[in-house]
Image 1 (tube, rainbow over the protein chains, first blue to last red):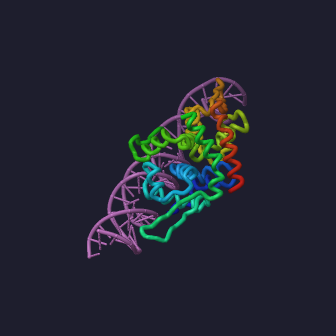
Image 2: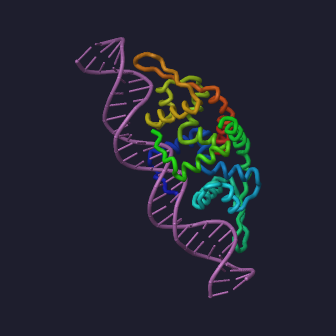
Image 3: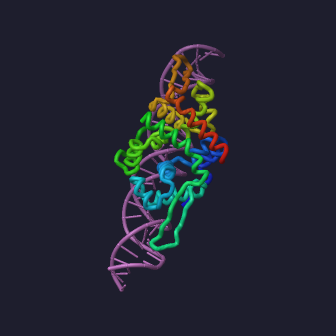
Length: 116
Length: 116
DNA sequence: GTTCATACTTACTTTTTTGTTGGTATCATA
DNA sequence: TATGATACCAACAAAAAAGTAAGTATGAAC
C-alpha cells in the first residue's frame, strides 16, 4: 500500500518541508483529491457509514475511499466504529483533532465559494 | 505544458468537485507540493525576485518553480513584475486576491506547528 | 570576442496518485 | 443451498505530478 520510494527527491523534498514548515505539514494531511471532502461531510453530518460516504463522494472508487479513510484514521483525524454484525456496519466520525480543522475548512469553503 | 487528458476520470472528478464545492476549488488553487510555500514567502516578504524565491524553496527545480509561478499568476494570486534590463530582473508579489488567503495560510501554519 | 549574470525553456524520465476490475467474508433469510 | 447486503482487498493500468539535464537570450564588462 505504501509504495513510496524512500530516497526519491520527491519524498526527500516532501519530508523536508513537512518537518520545517507548519503549512506544508497541514497540507500533507488534508491535501489530495478526496480528504477534505471526507472531512467536510463528517463535519456536517457527525457520523456516516461507509456506504453513505461513498454516495456523497460522487465519483470516488472503493480503492480511494478506503485508502483515504485509512490515512485519515492513521493521522488521528477520524475514528472508525465497527459494529459486530452481519452484514457489516462501520461508521466514521471526526476525532477532536479532526474537528480542530473546522475553522480552516470553513474558511477554505468561503474563499472558494467567493472566488470560484 | 498543460497535458492533462480532458476526459480522464481523474479530470472529470476534479472538475466536478471544483464546480460544486468551495473547499475543493480552494484546494485546487493552493494544493500541490510548492504553491503554499511560494504564497507564504510572498506574504511575509512582500516582493521577491525569482532567484530569491529559488533560494528559499529548498529543493525546488527551475521547472517546478516556473510552472507554479505561472499557475499562481494565471489564477490571479500573484503579480509578475518585469524590469527591462540585462541581466533580467523579475519580481513577484501577492495580488489582493493572493493576500486574501492570509487567514487560511496562518491557520494552516498554526495547526501544523501545533500538531506536527 | 569571450565571459557573466539572470530568468527562463524544452525534451525526457521517474515517481506518485488515481482509476478499473473483479474479487472476499459473513450470516440471516428465502 | 442459494441469495443478498455491506464493507473491504488486491493486481494491474492509466494518468498526473515532480525531477533531471541541458539548453536560450541579452547586453554590459572584461
